[in-house]
View 1 (cartoon, rainbow, N blue to C red):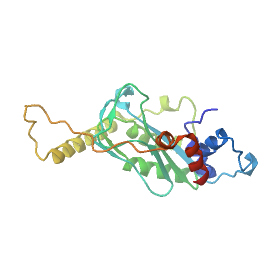
View 2 (cartoon, one colour):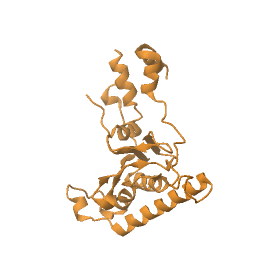
View 3 (cartoon, helix red, strand yellow):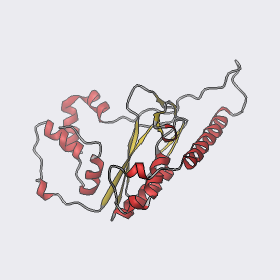
View 4 (cartoon, rainbow, N blue to C red):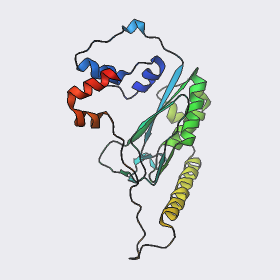
Length: 223
């Protein structure tokens, strides 16, 4: 069976590494626990950060990331491969990152998520972060009064979304000026284009390619 996108919520509330366990089972190992052994602790909420413009009917947003800064801190988990200069294309899923927040109760998890999304900075493409932040502020959401018509009844304010987009544009302009050292265009009369300053992280896929399936299994069992 495939791993659910929301698996971090299960992992952060049970302490079980579902990805590792799935790979060990595929390698022929048996689970060291039964489902009845698992206990949940606290509450968790996950937000999917996508390159879509909530101010424009959630159309996909493409471009180069001028700045990508992820949140951190107690109870916060981020899964992404973002880096400065990364090119966001229209050829793949618009998912950029997943942010999971844990709290002792629902209200605590929501407050941590709100702080995390306030710290999250993605400059260069539009994202749904400001949209999610407004949803998290709605009292019906905080109280758990949810159904399939929730978003239709609670319209977000375009003015607030536009304000955040303008702030992101201002940050992008300042970063470009500071990196180029001046405000003049390139020598050929065109605007200078920023170059990528980072690279994607080396994850488990990279490790498998480098060490093979046997080496991958050995690493999993020792980690």
